[in-house]
Image 1 (cartoon, rainbow, N blue to C red):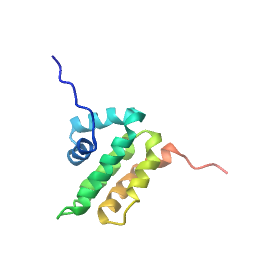
Image 2 (cartoon, one colour):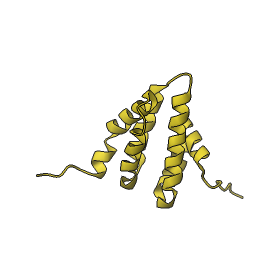
Image 3 (tube, rainbow, N blue to C red):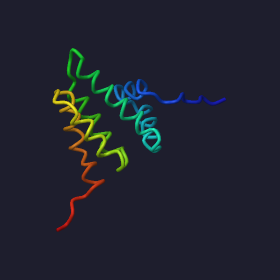
Image 4 (cartoon, one colour):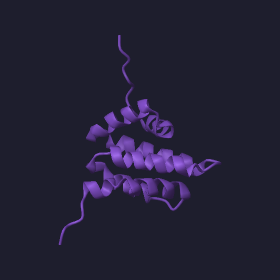
Length: 116
């Protein structure tokens, strides 16, 4: 009998973003395919960023890589919401995540500039 993954919640999303192993990336990718799970994903992202902001050691490289991966992997419907989450605080953890998200170019791919 195969294993059935439990229903996602914000803690699972935050833990998956914290680890970002290949298995976690696959699971998060499946989660991003369903528009019904967008709220859970964003709640988990906020929890992850809040945990990183409260941590004793700020791993800005890890946060930047997480933002870059999410920018590449997330569908167009999530790009604006991801950027809003990244801009929701001025803490250095959010700034590092925002840098990675910007570097990925996901927002520009989802909403290209108008040619006027």
